[in-house]
Image (cartoon, rainbow, N blue to C red; front, side, top):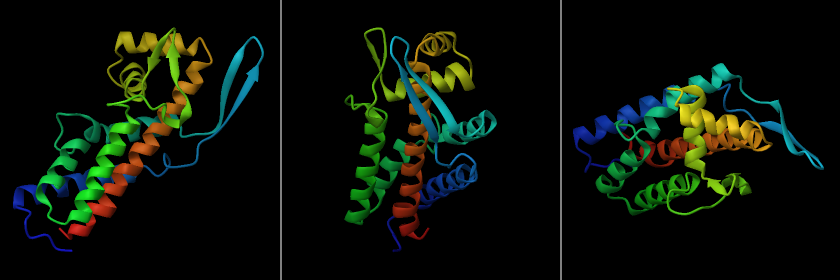
Length: 194
């Protein structure tokens, strides 16, 4: 469906988003099924063991391509693109898709309410670790910038069974966020026939 209400600036921003999605989608080794096992030993707790997961080089490549969708300062930031679409498209069914996708993004990151994404709630002491915080701990404590406070949180979690669960939830969140990015491109932007 052609949408004549989009001006050249909007079309250019959406084209940049699509270009970043194509780059992101190129990380095929990341988009694989995660296989893991959880083993409980009385007195020792739960141990997580991965039998199938992307290697660290692949994870870092994916994170480099994902960051423009996460960072508020980027023109391809997911929320900015959703807001741009919502304000500039006229088709109500596409607007509804944008709104639901933007809401799902916020739910995954637990921005407005706690939801224990994946059904598992991480805790450090008595403090809940929300999805977005866990994501940022891995992004900036393990893969980028090496923030000392976030690195300390990861080290503290790795002393407990929470470390493996934290990484599992991090990987699961990356795949869920990715599916929303792909959905927005396929089910909204591609329908505009730019």
